[in-house]
Every structure is written in structure tokens, then in C-alpha cells.
Image (cartoon, rainbow, N blue to C red; front, top):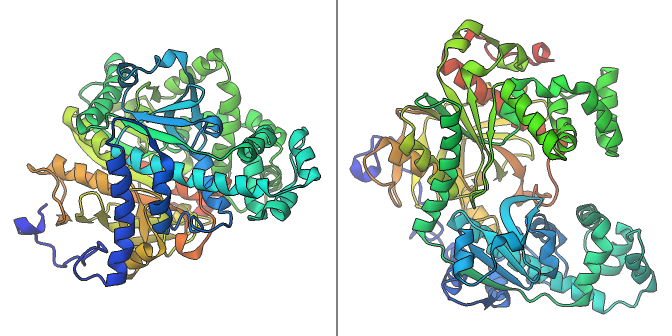
Length: 603
């Protein structure tokens, strides 16, 4: 593996991929500069030792013309952006005046803030991050610079749209709306649309998100304009390294206590449900309970789908449906300490050890020693596994809940420093697609990283033939090109158009940082800056898969504002099956290669 300045052997020369390149047009350079100016503005502001009013960032946020917040500079409501922000912020933000970010609880204490045991720990539905509610102050722990790049624009978008809604509410003199807000039943989405504008279906999403507190929350919006103040404590590279090391020390502590040291490791970055569900059989063990909970859920589309499965005329895969619906069982089973302990025991007996953590790196981890797994529990799509060989295998899968942006680099590097035999690295994440549909699966062989400016050309170990047999609602696309951006808000239409013209169709946040870590695992140098890198012959098995969560060029609804729901399981499990089959194949454990099991055989 070599970079171009070291004499790379790649037969192709990558195009200039940053809009700031000398080959870019003046319009493209202006587009890139608007994003860069916004990034520089909040980066320099946060170096201040005091608080800063968030409103000073509104002008540069609007000027950026973010594709995720296209109506930022318009008086019209952009409820899509507001929903996106609300899903990534805790409910307490609605009454907050100050947001303070830092890498560790002790830094808050040194700066004169109360100990976190005096705060109320809280969370957001759409982003894994540790929040602490101190009344008018929200504290939040950050794990990498990507957390800042994600959080600051989210807060700005939230404040802009809050104040637009506040202005519209202030002009209303509608008794019906006032009575609805005061009553137990929230107003219907149609009334909100008619009185306040905005998309009716977005209002419906907001009604569902805020639930019974909708009236209270909308009254807060109408009661005052939002004027947040923000502050960053610390934020050093050494601090981020400490956060990662503390996280990994908790994982290695469990590895030691489980007597799993010195095993060959396959590292997977995905989620904490799909790999586990495919090998533990726990959802099937509780199938009757899951069905009952689905019927009690009140979600008509799920009940209808269950009816179709029981009638034998459903299009989907029953296992995927069962895995998705198992979340109802897990929520009920883990409602108390006894239930959580029982579930951990059941998972442990099935061969999976879940590792909790209390650090700023809010990333769950799972240990799956192959010789503790029972092939009789495996999903049929994994193929026929050699039981005796599996029982003798010393390999272990370490699966983590995919991190955000640069945290991926820190995690993989930290793991590689302590693992003696890292045999494979497999990445499964969500991405925006510029040419596919929501739920499609994309497999890239070129990855450009905006953080380092380097472009990685790889022999992805996966291709469409690994995915297609298990896709029923979506399509698989390989030979794609991905770009790892700094943040979800830090793009605009011109920015995306530029990448699309250069044939970059996958927009995500983690693959580039993972590639930077892979370079340092395989080479004696630090990862390069602004260079093409040949990843054609890596000593470690390396594969990257993304599923499309939104399609920004078609103005479709995004995963941030909506969600893939049960139908997203199709792409998630197709990719997860491919990853498990790759690991089992690498270990020589698939006794009879099913050669891409057909859908009819699976069902």
C-alpha cells in the first residue's frame, strides 16, 4: 500500500475532489468557501474561554445554504430541519439557555460547574450522546471534533426554526389553537398546517415526537424567543485520546474477566442488534411474546404486516420482521434492573457479551467469541456451519455501535494498538445517496476523506453478489465512490452537485476516518494529507458497506426527520448477513458454501 508521493502503483489518477481545488470554477469555490467560513467561524468562537451567543452564527449558517436546512434564510418554516434537530437534542433543550460541551465530567467540575451527580442525565432519540440537565444549563460530553461539527449546526438550525415558529405564533389570535394547547389532546396536524404553515406531514411527525408534551412544548416556543449561549471546555486532541482510551479500557476489562485475551479479532462497526440477532436465536425464543407486543403497540402498519405474514402473503422476510419487532420485547424486558440482568444472562448463554460504558464515548460494544456460539441458533441465511470447527475456533468478533466521524479513527487506532492479531475490519453504516433510493445498499471502492483530503482506492471485500440474494425491498450498488464529510449540515446543493459530477455518490461520515486508521495500522507513517492512497493489497481483510438513509438531491424526506422503520431492516440485515458470512468464510467454518443462498431457500 503506497501513497502517490511514495510511488503508488495505482493505474488511475483520482480527480481533484475538493471544490477548493485549482480546477474548480469560481462558483464552486464560492460554495466551498461558504461552508468553510461557517466552520471557521464557530471553530474560532469556541476557542473563547467564556460563553458565546449562538445568534452570532446564524448569518453564516444561513449563507451556507445547507442542503439539510434549505429554508434557513427564509421566513417560511423548515420543519424538516427542525425535526432533524429535535431528534438529536434532548427535550430539556426547550427550556435551556446555556449549552456547555466538554470531554469529561471532571473538566466541568474544574471550571466551577456542579458535579454531574447533581444533574439529571438525559438523552436524545436520534443521536447517542451523554447529556446532563442542570435546569437552564445543558452539559454534554463530546468524544471527537465531529461531535462539535455535528452539534453546533444542529443547535443553530434548532434556534432559527424555533424563532420562526415563535414569530408565527405571536401573530395568531386563534382561540381554537389556544384551547387545544391548553387541553389534554393536541391539535391535529391539519390545523397546525393551516394556522402556522409548514408541511402537514412534518407537523404530524412533530406531534408523534413530542407526544403528550406537545402542547406544553409548543407553548414554550410561543412564550419566548430562543437565545442560546454555548461554550466549549477543553476540546484538545489529547483529551479526545483520553476519552477513547477510557472507553477501550472498559472493554478490555471485560475481555480480561471473560478470559478472552490474545484471540484473533474481527472488528465490526455496525449496530448492536443485527449481528447479535443473526446468531443468538433470542428473538425466536420469544416469538409469541413479540407477536403479542406488536398487536398491543398500536402501530397499524406493523399489525397489518404481521397479519400478512400469518396469512402467508407478506413480501418481506419473516426473520427481519421478527428482529425489528423484538425491540418491543427488549423495551419491556429491560424496564427494570431484574429484567436487564436476565437479558444479559440470556445473551451471555448465547455467546454474546455486551459491554456498557459510562464515558463520553457513548459507543456500546459486543464481544462474540466464535467458539461460544451455537450454530443451531443461527439465521439460515448464514449457511451451513461446521459445528466442530466452530467449537475449536479461537477467533472473536468485536462489534461496536458505529461512532460519529473522527471518533471512528480514534477507536480503530486504539483497538489496533492492543490487539495482537487483527484479522478483519468491516464497516456497516448509513449514508446519503446521490443516485440510489432510501434503503438501497451501496458498496464503494473509492473513499475520499474531507478531514485528511486523501482519497483511498480499495479492493472492497464485498460486492453486490454478497448482498443481492438477501435484498427484497431495495437494490445493491457496487463500484461506488464515497465521500466522508465533516458534518451533516456542512453541505449544500452546489457542494453535492460537485461531488456528483466527479462520480461520488455516497455521502457519509465514518469511512474516511476508518481508512486513515487502516493506513496507520498497515504502514509506518501517519496517514497522509491530500494524497491518493492505494489500498489494493492490505494485510487485513477490509470491507465497507453503506445503506441509503436519505437522498438529498431528490429533496426526499431524510432518515433524520423520518426513519426507515421496519423496511430498513431489509438493507441492514442483508449487509449483516454478508459480514457474518465473510467472517465465517475467512475462518473456514462454512462447511458447505451455499453460494449466495437464494431467497426461496431463505424464506
